[in-house]
Image 1: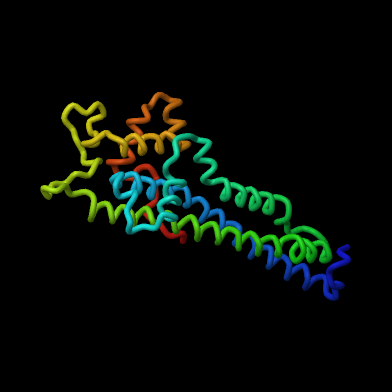
Image 2: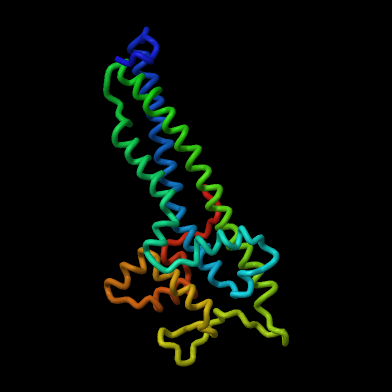
Length: 237
């Protein structure tokens, strides 16, 4: 019996109330998992936007140094360990969610047990977790949106040369391209993009079965991202 909980006056009503609250908690947890599942997809789309910019745009005075550094920290990575570091906070939150769901989201028990489980074990933990999750989403999506902002700045200010001709690094080039299509300029931007693509878990798996990193990178850069199950939404629903 919980010595911190008020005495149960009506066991049947307490059980019914607690089970209703548990159902609400279950729905909240499933919604958290649903939103979390979109985060990595949105990160990939934002990464393509970021890496499609010119190197000069990534030092744009129109974006604060703090925001530029945040973009670099998220997208200028080249290893699976760095990828996991980007998502370490989300992984910690999800581990807590799974632990909470598996250990405490049970409908069986006496009125006293259910009351303790709901109002002492689960409710404070879920409220605290939601605050943490929303804070993560806010800070993370601010950077993803900045990737779109930077992409727009690059398009408007850095992708036309002094003669008025397009000079974006990723203009498609087909003549002699090993994989059918390639960027016009395989310089620093391409190398950074390729390094980022190599850090993605699905690229690691693709390489294990014989695909080349370049092929995966070109697929992300030039072909419909919907075909790879990447979303086009940069705001968590």
